[in-house]
Image (tube, rainbow, N blue to C red):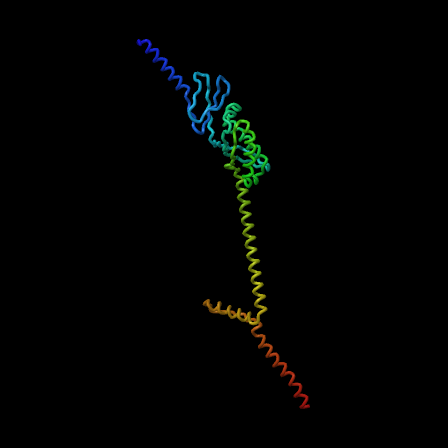
Length: 271
């Protein structure tokens, strides 16, 4: 075999290797290869090792099937009760049909972002500020359902939509702070009034028990004297309950009545 033949053979082998390596492609487990052969869509390739026809015959587009986290830029909205706010959100979605994600839309990530922005403004514009702050889970579900319906023809599945932050004007923040403070004062007054009512009811029950038990008032009076005696007071004014001196007054009254009844009797005898 002469040198010319060897050179030709070497060139052929080299070209074959170039063709093989040019047609060799590898797709990871989370990737799929969308292949266009002369402009026509053929079956998906991957995951793993596969071959395509090089030199412009086949065109490969790799699509990532993992969940994509997309942050929606802050959107200025006007709620149903005419409150201006800035709201941003985050969307979790993934490609479930790689071929439709390539064929049906030019850039599925940008398209999903635009749909999310317009839907966010539309849905939150129909909600009041209280609903936006207090019913966020319900609003998230509504956003997820609407966005998923619009991206479904593109082979996109929107799994979760979460409102991240709601930025309110300074004047509205001050008004909400005053409202919260008034609500706390209201609850404090209600708790205080309820405590006073329970205390008065307990005192009324105690007074009823003391009045129904003979000697209970005297015992309570003596206990009060003991409590006062603990303090080092120079002067102590003791209120004396009428029940303590009533027996003395009644005895003195009987004496006075007895003497008065005897005096007329003696006067009639002397006459």
